[in-house]
Image (cartoon, rainbow, N blue to C red; front, side, top):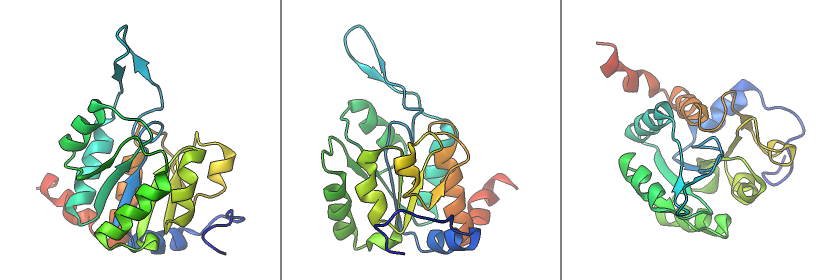
Length: 186
């Protein structure tokens, strides 16, 4: 199976765990992944988004465990700058018309091979990145044209725990989840 072909049969849990164990960088899309995909606009045209706090804490724990975090989104908003800063995400690409270009630029900048990168998306604009990543992830609401390229489809929906599910999947595969939970189990 090449990384560019649709996935014709489901990967085993062991295969997904092996891919997750190699991840050094995860890239998240925003709308539909870190949010539920709804776009709220006020009367002045300002955009509002709702983020799930459990997703945010999962991202923080994953970063503490040594995995780099990035956001690549086609939209641009000050709101995303604020959210990225709140989560200590250093790599924020907004207004990315060509997400693959941003993916390759970031991969080169960080010295992380595409197969050591996970990408979590929900729509066809995310496919170029997903198809070149070592662990392509989507949410259940993603169209079939996206799900067929995903190594893993989350059980939880975007903006409602999907990102946390993936963060814990990676930490579990890398043996770092217990260390991240330990401070809360004293």
